[in-house]
Length: 318
Image (cartoon, rainbow, N blue to C red; front, top):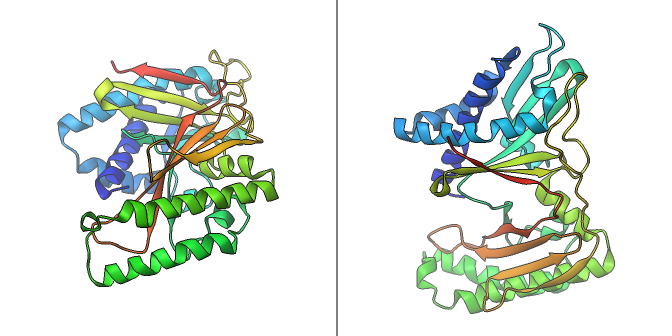
């Protein structure tokens, strides 16, 4: 993800903190963990007033839907029962918690989280290099020698081109000599891993979606709507309060247990498509993340399909 995209994402987080605090404090005590939001505040301050209004409209759009799914946010057990709004550190994501904003009620030991995205739908941008064992990192099964024997010579060549300061756009054979063989090795390695361990599909989705359930919130400026999507894999979301019940029911979604197909996307040399049971499917598009050739690439991983019991609500801006 570019620096600009990262700043836009952080600014959207801050817009959501502003709107959440404004809407919650009308109903009950709420506070913001100021230290946790400082990086997002700095990104917010780089935007123009017009951009501020756009981001605030995007943030405001989904909040009624969130409240209808999570009545514990507004339910209050007294003046000492305070809602705390905070933003997770980047290190939390590295540890498996992909939530950006966390809404907490310490008095009842309860929290829910939101994963915020601004104009993009990538589930993850995962790096590939001659030192990164994606199998061990993603699903706990190290890559086989047959994978390393294919990819290491390619990365050795990329290192030489880096030293020559060759630009990616000048490398005319990159699709055939880099992208295609690496994606092919990736496909073969994941299929090998699945034959060795049938829990790979569930572990892969858990890697992509993290160790805690959450709502994904995506601002789509061109359509002037905010997409609100539930990822309730463990049943952590949608808890009723003592006095109020959720009016939007969020079912629990099943993890996949089988790989149906893993292959190249038709007419593509740089993208693999993975089809799993229980409604899950993903794409893995390999790409460079720099101007000058370097021995490092990234997978842009996106969901092509999710189970029907993952609820998606399109919230139009006001």
